[in-house]
Image 1: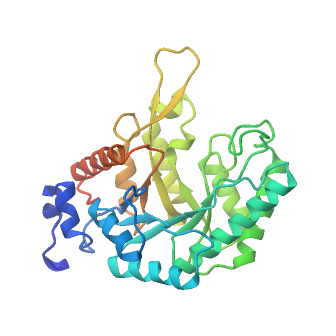
Image 2: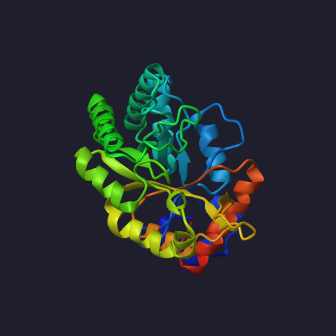
Length: 310
């Protein structure tokens, strides 16, 4: 089936299994979102990787190789992604450049640089990390010094140095929003973008991470809209999770859950994301292939109601 005859109705009527037979033929006039997630089936080649993605109807992927991959392997996976119309959403650089331990901080900085180099070489939308934490026990945990001016300035300096080491031209270095580390809000991300002042510094959007109070929980659709209104042109990749507020506790407790089991305003999220071109939505933090299939089914069902191909 070619692109001219592939219609929105066709996709919306397809099951997950059926969708994979049409993948990736989406017409340019349709509203669509590229969905992706971790792969549980083993693969040992670019063709096997693509086959696993198509089986799940994914049109976006996490980077399939590590930073020590050989140049020819990087080229092979990049070529397979282009041929199959798959976007490599992000290379994860998960580490703590803000660590008070100099050796840990140095190792984290090197990991960020190497990950950004891989993202540039393989053509990923971005390299993503958190800014880090001063917490000595939890690399991504809360600490009283995380949200100080001194730490903000340190993040700016580290981020500039990472980008300047590689000088990417087609990928971006990004920092994931976090509730207790910069960037911890839409406005603090805007401040970072201005302060870092590097063209290839972009935004990684996970709105669930800044739903941090009953107020933001119950009005998370407004929060999501504000994210896209202010950060939209800079967004390179998104994470899709969900969240609940426990009702049997008198101290607010917000709990992450599978998409479809919480109160994230996915209609607002998907409508806003569909207006951006080829910005992926990547599922994460689930433990089984079945859970990811259930999450994908929910996200696609919401998309269908909004007239969006996912």
